[in-house]
Length: 142
Length: 186
Image 1 (cartoon, one colour):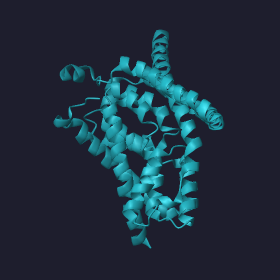
Image 2 (tube, chains in turn blue, green; image 1 turned 45 degrees about the horizontal axis):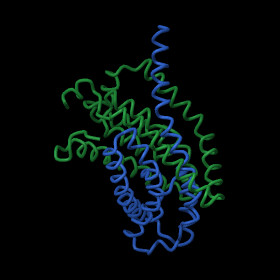
Image 3 (cartoon, chains in turn yellow, green; image 1 turned 90 degrees about the vertical axis):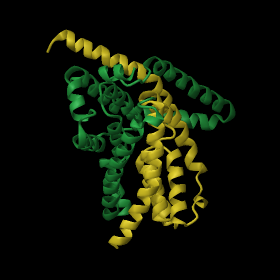
Image 4 (cartoon, rainbow over the protein chains, first blue to last red; image 1 turned 180 degrees about the vertical axis):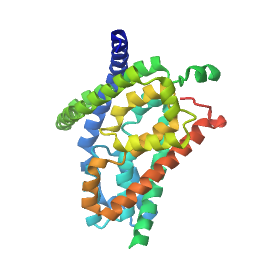
């Protein structure tokens, strides 16, 4: 392998990485703050029992929340046990990992504002739609 | 203008603004933290600890991303990227983005620099969306999901998510190309 090519590739990667660092650092700080605040503010009283509205509310909460997906599973399981419907729980799990309100500034800076806004908006709508479809499919498979 | 962009396959992601925007973003978050330290020191301390834990956790993944970017810059030519995930990649591109999205690990934002680089080299934005959507399918966490909600639910959810990823890609393709909303403007 050509030494100068190796050097060139390394320098290019290094430059890209260094320019990405302030965004990644800002992102980590923001996520750190959100994971410290959100679980306390969450209320089970959010859900009404109507599948569509529950899906919407579940997706809304999941969009704002961030952190490891396993947190959404634990929360989802707890909500199911507390009597919250599967649609709301699925919407929460889905939007938790597909919609990133907290990550939106970083996504906009790297991939473009228009791309980030559209992608998150579509992911939100899909979280609601897929949660309803999953519940229907599960009912069919019973 | 657009013709020039297409010729060098560089989307108009304004790199200068991006660089400055990154520092402005970091400064804004630091201002929020400073305010938090004054208003609610306990929460600020908890947030800082969470930040340190997160940073420690993602370091190995960041190294992996750095290695991928280095290997990409060293070995992969733009023509190869355009062939597999470029504008004429068709369904092969969708399949490629789906599989790589599923097997990728770590937080979503760690992948942004690599995706931005691939975008500049000609990757379709729709396939970036497909990749990002399929990152939601976390292979290592699937047994946990199955343990909590059952195998049937896990399979149904995963299949619907793969389908939704494709739908998202197709919608993004249409939206980002639509002339009335401004072709490929960021």
